[in-house]
Length: 223
View 1: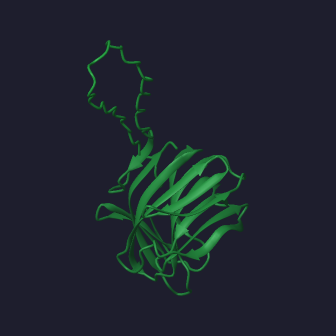
View 2: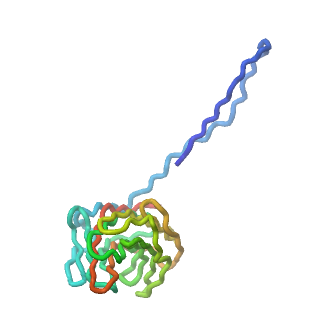
View 3: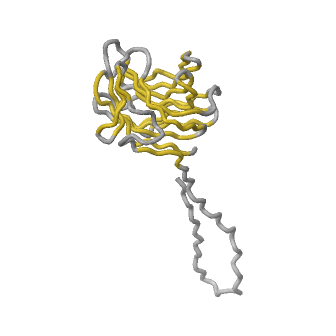
């Protein structure tokens, strides 16, 4: 927010006869108010239907990826190991990503979020929340997990069936920042991955369970 401050000079009246008129000394010229910086949109998709650039829809024993009700649904049937992903075939390096997630059905003991700078299914950063109120940032390098933050609970995360959360992920150089519903959660640093793809992911945690999450309103912009 830019706040413009205007200065006023107040002239008091005099009781003595006026003297010679003196030209006022000009004050400094106010600096121009800068225009707000507008981020450039690199990619956007409301996720209401399949579009070119995304992987195909999927229906198999491990789950289902499909479009319904103007949103992308990901259902993971394969707990506890391995998330179900839907990948965008575009690479990014430094950017801001925002997307809405809605808990639709199944267990709320889950993870729902995005992976960024992914090279393949074994190398990426993961930003996730759970429908029972936790968040975390993870790194997978050659399938080896490093927990960069969390899991940590937050009252800013809306919980339960039907809850919708707005995820905000910033990836800038070695800095990874995570916010939800307009509230900052965590910032970490790591230099392993410089650029890569983006995926939407869902993971059901308990054995013999499933979880289904819907995604809408994906926007990726410059920092």
